[in-house]
Image (tube, rainbow, N blue to C red; front, side, top):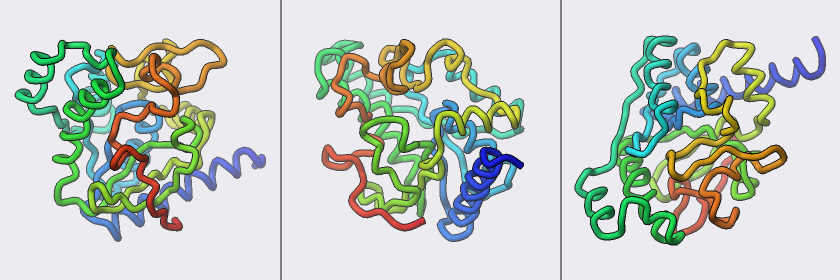
Length: 242
């Protein structure tokens, strides 16, 4: 076995150990899936490993058709129905009526308000009554995630948050997907390493940061939707050794 294979095996084993501990010590726990590559790795590990961790996704109303198609792909491949949470229609209608359908292009404040309505509020409902939640965030994804830990306190939701893939590289993710036949979003083959809502995501050019296509009109330091933010700051208030 090569050093590379051993490293990958240890990475996977460590991630499985984290998922096992979440299921045993933090029940009920849920995994928030964006249906992108990292989250499909975790979906595969959770469902094949039989860990008691529910999986949900936020259907913002502005997702690509390729992303929505992943719900059916997961059902067909694993026999599992991902729970779907949508924004409150009244809040969406009020935002659009007051500001316009695409007001998020006008300012960071308008964009974050759109994210709050379409993602942050539904997330709160999805996490209600849970002890922990799981994300597919990785340290290498963006400048805003450089200090990411596997286990963190989430004071915004009064629970523990886990990022089991924090140590994984982009190569690690895709090696796992290919070696295990994991279904993935077709947009990844079209130059989209990071996928969000359709009007807020573009394909990237060679050499660009993997999250350069997300809110591409904004400063890189502000590129978070609010799911991992409290009072305007990324949730890194207290990290816990994994």
